[in-house]
Length: 393
Ligand code: NZQ
Ligand code: ZN
Image 1 (cartoon, protein in one colour):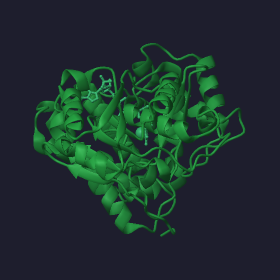
Image 2 (tube, helix red, strand yellow):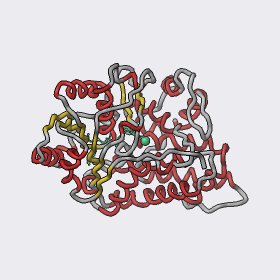
Image 3 (cartoon, helix red, strand yellow):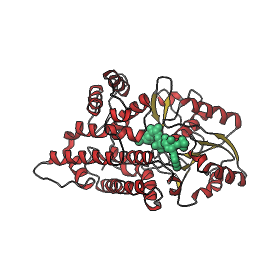
Image 4 (cartoon, helix red, strand yellow):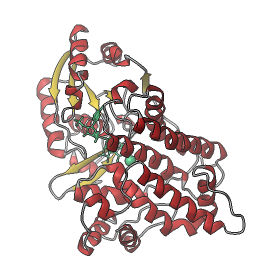
């Protein structure tokens, strides 16, 4: 097992009516004047936003509002948020929404204290070792931003989607009420489950084979998500199943499934170029790419793919044909993605064939103009990235 540091300092408040604790939590973590950040309308429509504003007011906490965060959150709104926070003297940011809202809040939280241009952080031109404190009320289990150390922002100038992060942007608290996810459309539910499974798989597909406990945790998480998703697609108000998924999304990306491994992240990096260029839903983009990534790399550690096939996908182990077992596991995952309504090709997600020029552009950007590699399970160069996009076409 590799040496590791595990740091997951977020206070999780989970369950029915958990949002009612919001004012006490904001005060506990030092908030007096709060930027309430939210998305395109779901939090308003459900009444959650008004309820939260009422609770903060009752608690004597001042609020400033900034809505309009879109999926694949944009840099321009981050800049607006930074200005508002500075002008209004905001000392805490509360996100009401999903990964996009929380990521936008994290970028604002860095930007308020960072002296340079916040985008510099995302393109490796700067580092920031502090930010405003934040908390969130999660409405979609997916990105795991509620417990992660990352933020992903899209710069509309060039459609570049880039990530940044360190321990400072971890949420002080994350309120998770599974009832608040009953209104999620099936596509977002399925894309969310895909994303959290991929967060686990990016860590699971590692060349380090000496991490039994971490593997077992990862496999249990994957099997649970794989089963529970069908329950919520059938009955969106199934509290029990929604709760498993909500907690699974947080655990999938708070690093517990990565202790002692060297994680891969190539599928994520390939997907970021896809959602940068075509503005697709992140989880769906991962489903469109992963089967091709897997078929491209599995020979670098067949036994790990056999283990996945058998322990996660329930494929019978043909000891005379490990490669066949590995490939049947990949095919089973692909069928699972399709069964929950996810795309499994670029054409399916983009809605038209993706051109050679577009593929070459994505591979160019993903490899930083041919200067960077991606992934650790198999180290991918620019030409490997282009080959995987072509296989996924
Ligand atoms: O904007 P509203 O109206 O709220 O609608 C949202 C949005 O359209 C809707 N939604 C959210 N909660 C809802 C709801 N609709 C009905 N009922 C509810 N309760 O769902 C849509 C998607 O929301 P979004 O926040 O974009 O989803 P997600 O949590 O999947 O976040 C995606 C973003 O997170 C990034 C992705 O790249 C993407 O930009 N990621 C962030 C990570 C991190 N910070 O650690 C890691 C991930 O790998 C990922 O890259
Ligand atoms: Zn993800």
